[in-house]
Length: 264
Ligand code: NI
Image (cartoon, rainbow, N blue to C red; front, side, top):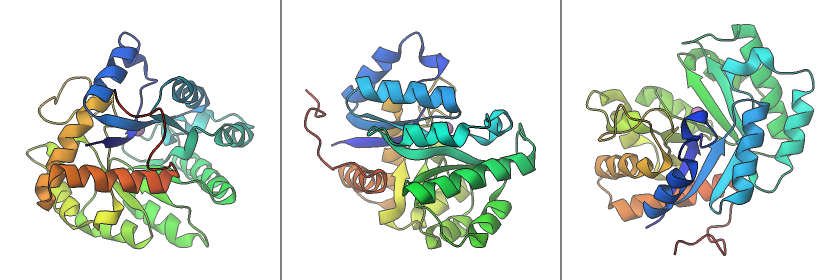
């Protein structure tokens, strides 16, 4: 079995004490690949550096809605440079967050729109962070002539919203909350997303799944979310691992097999 954690933040300071151990535990848990996702230019650079030095780790570069207000004037040029790096597989994470509203909403919308344009121009997939903003997001997508490929990361909506995003061609990625006892809507959504659109992730260090809930999360824990997803779909865990692995590789444009990446 091999598992793909499509979204983590191994560059986060919460891993400063034990980053190499977390990487080792990830590999021991058969999580053979992960994408380390940036949230501003600095963290994107850190993710890129981790991807250069750790087999199985890839990177994404982008400006998160929380950081949109601090994006420097030349941020699109800097992102363009990073996206040319062979280990940087996606633009992200970007999007709208109306729960925290850490950047003004018009700024969030502008910075997201500019990055979506860049992704379309470069032919790169996009990782979308959407919190309490599904209405505006769907309107935004409908207003565009051309949409990039991409992931609705840490999906948190209803089955209806999931259906809407799938219709637009997006992948739906489930994180730790899928395993929580009180998540009927999320679990209902996970039961009906087409198999070829399903992904799993940790979003670590955040959102640890059961039975690790409340602790710092790490990529190894994606196995629990995968197990839950397999259970909901009544599919053997190994098959669900392979399905989500293939989906992630296709979307991120990574060959299914890569010499030197296999576990000892
Ligand atoms: Ni994230």
